[in-house]
Image 1 (cartoon, helix red, strand yellow):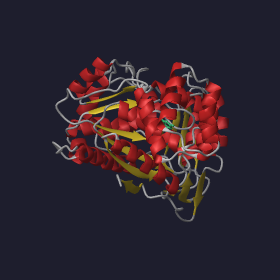
Image 2 (cartoon, rainbow, N blue to C red; image 1 turned 30 degrees about the vertical axis):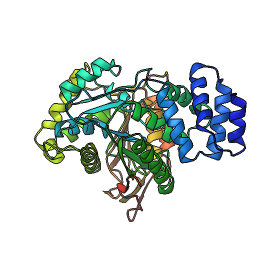
Image 3 (cartoon, protein in one colour; image 1 turned 60 degrees about the vertical axis):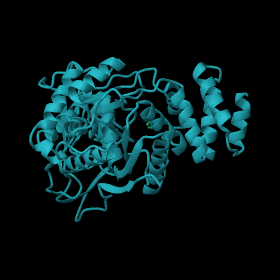
Image 4 (spheres, rainbow, N blue to C red; image 1 turned 180 degrees about the vertical axis):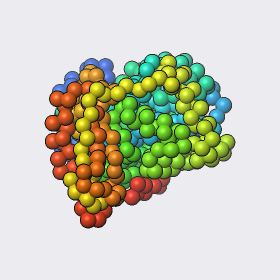
Length: 426
Ligand code: URA
């Protein structure tokens, strides 16, 4: 087989055979198919799509490019959650220890932020001492001691996806449902979880801007998981406005700790509880306690402290704070009609919370506090947002990103329901 034959087949809207897919993924991982050939194929896939059989073969080939983890030595079922990414989406932080406190193990391999969306590992790394890289043996030990572990995927897990994702990122080929679904699910299936809840975000701050696209992505991923023997369900949830009241690494850790202490913003608490119940159900665990009770009685907080300590973090250490702040006030009295997720995410990124290139550092203290959420009554001159940055020179570009991203009016604007829909295997 050769790469040009495979590229031509997809360019001409043909269906790739499983043998062609197996060959091209294997040859690309070994370096026998060049980056420019794989980027041509990725663009042909983006433009012409793949059917369900092709997507399943592509996913399986990426799983086979590396190791598959196995948690069968554990005495309780495993459950994981994956979010397609958004602004202020810190849900993994309270959710993983909460589900552990209710009786399932949570082995989660997570990622870093890129562009305007935040990454779970960047958030956790703002905790002094916390380590994202663990060996498989350390992961197992952390799971046994804390019930939950959130860490970086090692280089042995789906290496084909690692290489391909980096290539897609610089060739305009990220936004393809077959490529996104196979990328996410190859890692989640290789991670070895027994059950998976997908949080597919919809709106300006998400990859998927419309409910129709998000549903297609969710259905594709649920089918891939189910066919691979992972009990998989998806929720479509709102990302037209930011989640919670904090956007940025350390700010989001602080908000997560508030949730674990029984407080926190209503939307973060509601989504955390809903996802916890979905995870316990998918795992087939009879919960040792109700998730709401585990937040109230401190058992989820205890699991959080064990989880952070097991990875070298100090749960009592002060979190980093940015040196400079700037407050944005409400321009008029009325109702906050709109607060756009993308505008807030882009502004936080420009403040230093995110990175432009994979190798860039992030500022742990940078980000945005939201003093009002869409639908809240506000008075002219009251603080709407506080921007945090290490360097005040970052404020003007962040303010530009926010320009037109919020509006105060006579009444609340339309917004998506927090949980839009639930997708299960057909
Ligand atoms: N996250 C992934 O892991 N892969 C994608 O393609 C998109 C988001």
